Amino acid sequence: MAIDITWIRDDAELASYCAEWQRLPFVALDTEFMRVDTFYPKAGLIQVGDGKRAYLIDPLLIGDWAPFAALLENSAVLKVLHACSEDLEVFLRLTGALPQPLLDTQLAAGYLGIGYSMGYSRLVQSVLGIDLPKDETRSDWLQRPLTEMQVRYAAEDAQHLAELYAALAPRLVEPKLSWILEDGAELIANLRREVVPEELYREAKLAWKLSRAQLAVLRELCAWREIEARLRDMPRNRILREHSLWPLARFQPDNLVALARIDDMHPRTVRQDGNTLLKLIREAAETPPADWPEAIPEPLPPEASGLLKTLRAVGQAEAERLGMAPELMLRKKHLEALLKTGFPNGPYQLPDALKGWRRELMGQALLDTLAASNQ
Image (cartoon, rainbow, N blue to C red; front, side, top):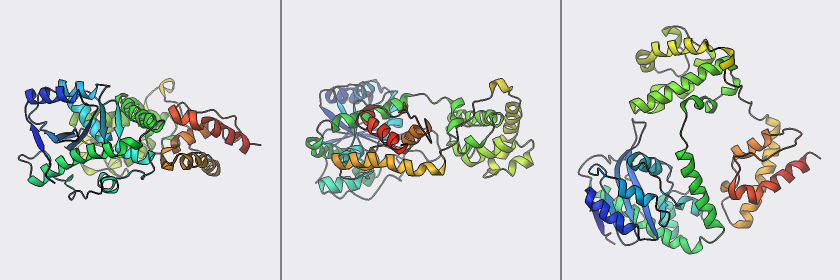
């Protein structure tokens, strides 16, 4: 069946259609972008579906995104996306706005017990019985003109996403609908939270093995890498590879030969930024003890794994009762944070990260399970 496609190629058209979409109960949104050699995604196409037709917005021709930003932020219009974390970055970069309320159909499929982390094509096939054309996502979305296949692929995404939501909507009853929207709101809140470059060292692999003096060096390396990636609009690993961070902070090379011997150190990095890195390491190593970061807590010992499994079973039992994908219930990092509050002998307390419906539904059961395990 041919899809009705409307192209939007200037600011006036976009403003006019946005005014129409503001009156709808929902819009389906998708993006096509390129992000091979860049830090930020480069938008190639924005798709909107209203259930009747597919609208293709050419971002290379739009200068005023204010009407679209207003649509994204209109709380009366539900925004439907699929597996949307990268799409959200595109919207934020283009318009400065993020869609709310947000319903992710990949999440909805998990909540309805259809399947966890399902790809778009598989979900469309499963719910609508439609076979989508072969994947065009790897093609060049910044080229003009786009190929006929690209246009068809992009339009079908928007059209079928709207149909998918219409098919799932009758099954999305309370409390599950509120929970899905709560997860969407959390995704938005996390994206809005500014990444502070000086805090990134906490997430670095094996950071807990470093002394506080070495952490001072790691902190500067991670911050420098993040700031440079943004300034140069390049992927972080093109600036400095992830696996080089820890040995740099641990061994603190003081010349280019030693720097080149660091694990996973790319020769290009030594050539382009070697002297900068040596200076950064030298200066960070002189950080006075009063300014060293706090030590990073060790991961849980292997003997905690049995208890982790017992806690996960609490979530699995609830998932079974509710007909949901068990992976949606309790995140491993939240369970680990809970165990870290009192392992091995307690008392335990629920971590702040475990919040919302999961805390209300399972928080007490988790604490009771831990109390029983210590008797």
